[in-house]
Amino acid sequence: GTDADAEAPDAGERVGTARVLADLPALDIPSAIDRFWLPPVPLPARPPTLDAPVDLLLRQLPDPPPALGGEETLDALSDVYRSLPRD
Image 1: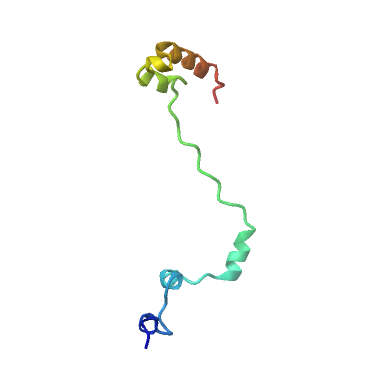
Image 2: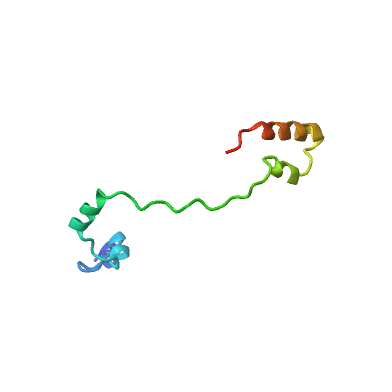
Protein backbone atom coordinates (compact mmCIF):
# COMPACT_ATOMS: atom_id res chain seq x y z
CA GLY A 1 0.00 0.00 0.00
CA THR A 2 1.31 3.23 -1.21
CA ASP A 3 -0.80 6.09 -2.51
CA ALA A 4 0.27 5.22 -6.08
CA ASP A 5 -1.19 1.71 -5.64
CA ALA A 6 -4.48 3.15 -4.43
CA GLU A 7 -4.77 5.42 -7.50
CA ALA A 8 -3.66 2.81 -10.07
CA PRO A 9 -6.49 1.77 -12.42
CA ASP A 10 -7.74 -1.80 -12.54
CA ALA A 11 -6.22 -4.01 -15.23
CA GLY A 12 -9.49 -3.99 -17.25
CA GLU A 13 -10.26 -0.29 -16.84
CA ARG A 14 -9.59 1.95 -19.85
CA VAL A 15 -7.64 5.11 -19.18
CA GLY A 16 -6.52 8.11 -21.22
CA THR A 17 -7.21 8.00 -24.95
CA ALA A 18 -8.39 4.38 -24.80
CA ARG A 19 -11.33 5.55 -22.65
CA VAL A 20 -12.19 8.35 -25.08
CA LEU A 21 -11.82 6.24 -28.22
CA ALA A 22 -13.72 3.22 -26.84
CA ASP A 23 -17.07 4.41 -28.28
CA LEU A 24 -15.78 4.73 -31.85
CA PRO A 25 -16.85 2.02 -34.29
CA ALA A 26 -14.27 -0.52 -35.39
CA LEU A 27 -12.46 0.32 -38.62
CA ASP A 28 -12.63 -2.08 -41.55
CA ILE A 29 -8.96 -1.92 -42.56
CA PRO A 30 -9.25 -3.58 -46.04
CA SER A 31 -12.12 -1.26 -46.96
CA ALA A 32 -10.19 1.79 -45.75
CA ILE A 33 -7.14 0.75 -47.79
CA ASP A 34 -9.29 0.36 -50.92
CA ARG A 35 -10.84 3.81 -50.39
CA PHE A 36 -7.42 5.41 -49.88
CA TRP A 37 -6.69 5.32 -53.61
CA LEU A 38 -10.03 6.81 -54.66
CA PRO A 39 -10.13 10.51 -55.58
CA PRO A 40 -11.70 12.80 -52.98
CA VAL A 41 -15.26 13.99 -53.24
CA PRO A 42 -15.40 17.17 -55.38
CA LEU A 43 -15.63 20.40 -53.45
CA PRO A 44 -18.94 22.24 -53.57
CA ALA A 45 -19.25 25.34 -55.71
CA ARG A 46 -17.82 28.47 -54.13
CA PRO A 47 -20.48 30.52 -52.40
CA PRO A 48 -21.28 33.92 -53.85
CA THR A 49 -19.33 36.85 -52.50
CA LEU A 50 -20.15 40.49 -52.12
CA ASP A 51 -19.03 42.49 -55.12
CA ALA A 52 -17.85 45.61 -53.30
CA PRO A 53 -15.23 48.26 -53.93
CA VAL A 54 -11.80 47.19 -52.67
CA ASP A 55 -11.52 50.23 -50.40
CA LEU A 56 -14.87 49.60 -48.67
CA LEU A 57 -13.24 48.68 -45.37
CA LEU A 58 -11.16 51.86 -45.39
CA ARG A 59 -14.28 53.95 -45.92
CA GLN A 60 -15.93 52.34 -42.88
CA LEU A 61 -13.06 53.19 -40.53
CA PRO A 62 -12.59 56.60 -38.90
CA ASP A 63 -9.84 58.85 -40.20
CA PRO A 64 -6.40 57.94 -38.85
CA PRO A 65 -5.12 60.24 -36.10
CA PRO A 66 -2.86 63.15 -37.10
CA ALA A 67 0.18 61.26 -35.79
CA LEU A 68 -0.43 58.68 -38.55
CA GLY A 69 -1.03 61.25 -41.28
CA GLY A 70 -4.76 61.85 -40.89
CA GLU A 71 -6.95 62.01 -43.98
CA GLU A 72 -3.93 62.08 -46.32
CA THR A 73 -2.99 58.58 -45.13
CA LEU A 74 -6.54 57.41 -45.72
CA ASP A 75 -6.50 58.84 -49.26
CA ALA A 76 -3.11 57.22 -50.00
CA LEU A 77 -4.28 53.84 -48.71
CA SER A 78 -7.48 54.12 -50.72
CA ASP A 79 -5.42 54.72 -53.88
CA VAL A 80 -3.26 51.69 -53.10
CA TYR A 81 -6.33 49.48 -52.51
CA ARG A 82 -7.90 50.59 -55.79
CA SER A 83 -4.67 49.77 -57.68
CA LEU A 84 -4.72 46.14 -56.44
CA PRO A 85 -5.74 43.53 -59.02
CA ARG A 86 -9.28 42.25 -58.66
CA ASP A 87 -9.78 38.49 -58.60
